Figure: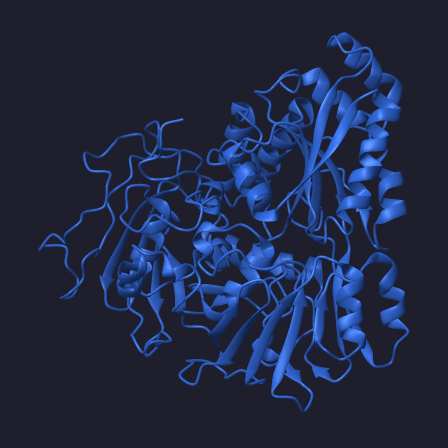
Length: 576
């Protein structure tokens, strides 16, 4: 756990896919049962016959009506078989099951703690996790202070204390590192990387461009309800010019929504090429020969996919005007409000956003944005894309997945729910004496494995303040990183790599059809307040995200975007 191995994208992804394929038994099933069970909501009291051990309140969830509208999800039922065994029943095989349960948005919380702190929402900034660090202080707008957890079940943190700070200015982050005020920074500015590499007191850790920047719009709002308008915008932006002028070395123009290092990502047709003449003709055909007026909505938060938001927004604004006659007013929004509006589908102009890999499978990029549980981010999802993605996730057969993602990518090009722009290379920088320093491919650095020279505190500066420390209801990368200091999932991603390996579970195994997964929990794991981890905590943690009628389905915004996006849909989904 203390090593930071060199990372090979293709080798790591290939290993993960092989692991998932082996676990799934190469199943080619693509359909889910259609019979709807009578009970779909989890019980509020444990049936006597189902109680696996005394004292549990939610030993099992209700059984979801697989394949019966309006339910679109992949989960069927969760059960605490005994104190240290959890069973996941699925509607059909899921080729990315292990990778999904390793993701921090599906962390495991103490069920009693959640119940006690749900009413006042204090669990949002006073977490009770099992991770290597505990939260000591959160001075809002200033810093987060963490302390190594003495009762941690695994290898103890190499540096006793950890501090998070933030700034959305790359120049400020570099200045703090050069002056010695911080030990590491995320996403140095494009022009700062060479400076860092030339400074013997610093070290630069590259992060591959496993991310995608895109332009989005709501296809239910005029004029974006016309596919000709969306296609015109896709052909009217010189993406190569954007990457050449504003992105770090190693960045590339994106031909597909999912980076090609991920298996099955780049099947089918490339996205639209730059062709301003054809783009203007499409706009004229749509009734806008002289363009139209709109907003260009974005946030200031620096990300690997967006290294300089205001500058890149200005460049896109100028290209829209010069190439298409579209007058776009820049609309800079606060980060949290912007993300909430995106999830709710209330952004009413062209918006700039992006996505970084959470796990190495096309479902992470495509299902979240365009799948059955993708919601209103781009307006109404396109059913032919939804159908193709549902086939892709329901099989581990390589030929079947290739066919499914070929169809999905071709339909994404045709419908243009989003304009695919760039894959941005990025990285992190540290003081030279920070041992085991690295930049996670997923933006999820494990700071417990780093040693800050002879100092007892490692100070990390990232791009933005976390929104909360309950990541079941968050989808912001800066927030997820903070959650990972204190909270853990059943599996995790290996340090410096991408493979899914056991964490709170010692092993999860599938039945022959890959529709039932049984996870054995690690014995002796303690939450930070001394409570024991048990299977009930797993069931409640998942049920609170999955079921909109669960009493703990609260969170910060209540959107819980990751769960339907990656698991296909909510139990008891709200009316459209």
